[in-house]
Length: 70
Image (cartoon, rainbow, N blue to C red; front, side):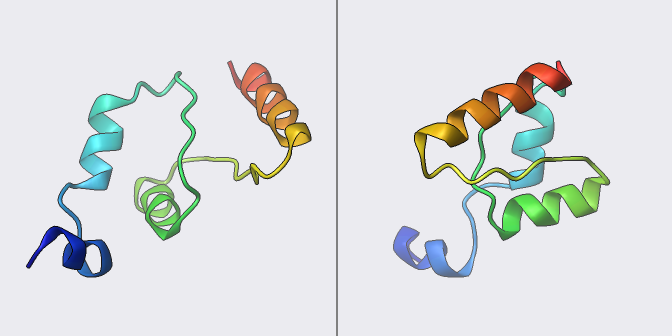
């Protein structure tokens, strides 16, 4: 299986292991709100906020969400 094939059928890394071992719980992270993130949140019983990042106003919403959780 080539890397381009893996993009559709699998992964070169363990997403849960990467997130839980490399990101501190108190550190906000910007992640793609894809099925991988939703599955990780469900499997680890975690909380998260999904915010669309399509306009300048969205960055203000993200900054506000981060400042209220820290």
